[in-house]
Length: 254
Ligand code: F6P
Image (cartoon, rainbow, N blue to C red; front, side, top):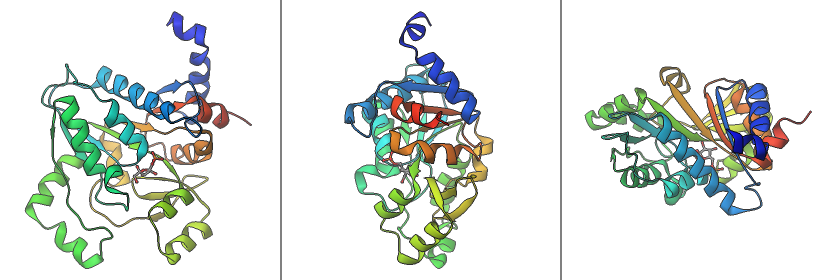
């Protein structure tokens, strides 16, 4: 506590908490837009947070993206959380393999000495395949685990950046721009006031399912993501934010 006071980050963390109405905020020094190691520091802070809350036999749902990849990179054995199960939150969302939820989930589980289950779904998914896939017993079984996850840990992206990174079609890009989407998380695109503008069709966690989890942790930083973070938190679905100084200082401005 004393060290935190000295560094001044407890004040910044409190301001972010008040601004976003969340239970807990962790701010690491630096701006991850500029320095890669700041993202690893966020990853480490997220691992420390998980270590402080996880119990044995819990299920943790994880999303994809480079921030989650940094969490997996920094993961270490979770002594108090024996027998934990890691699952991907949602099916394919158009990320490269190393940034996909499945890949990240398997790496996290291995480093944490936990178990994992994966979701194999084609990406993108047609309405027809969607209907048949959710009827598959093996998919049903993992969907059940996902929807009952005790802890969810996820990234938040800038809407336009994510749509481009996923090579979204012209029609979808149009919808995102017409709807003034600002943020993206779990395959949902949100506008400035937190309304859903577009949703990627895939199986897995739905926004409503987050209400069942006791702890939903967002890991997102970089000055360029400040508006996206504000937009995403308007829904009030996550109660913890692990971020960096670059995003924190920007998002409390005004
Ligand atoms: O695509 C998965 C995802 O978690 C998105 O929901 C989110 O917008 C993005 O990754 C965040 O990625 P990054 O941490 O690389 O900015």
